[in-house]
Length: 131
Image 1 (cartoon, one colour):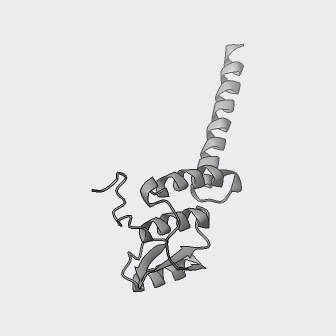
Image 2: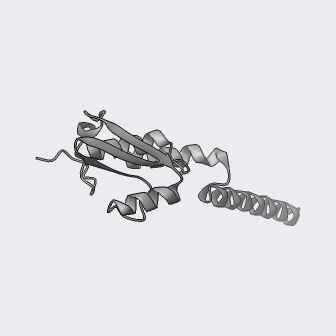
Image 3: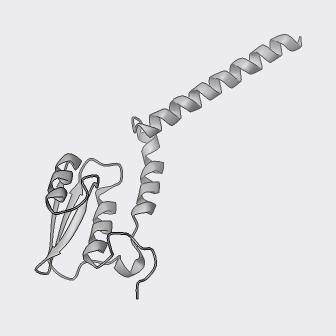
């Protein structure tokens, strides 16, 4: 009697482990929408600027939203890292922001992050107030 129970229990554990592995791989590859909310939230928290920089830019803002491949090319032409997925710079009092249309976090998350750079948040992303 114990042998069939052990076989059934082993089979159930194997099925559960297989299902969890499949779900984890699907989430890592962003193939399923049910994983996106958790991943996007994690990304949103990571990109959140400190409060002193998290406010609208006091001046004109020019924003472009495009596929990340185009963002990388345009941002690299402005001296940003070619690995980045968004960038911003200030020129003659105007904040220029280039944002990805096809990344995991919402465009609004990248917009807030890049606006903070226009407001003076340094590129090395310090979390505490400077000065």
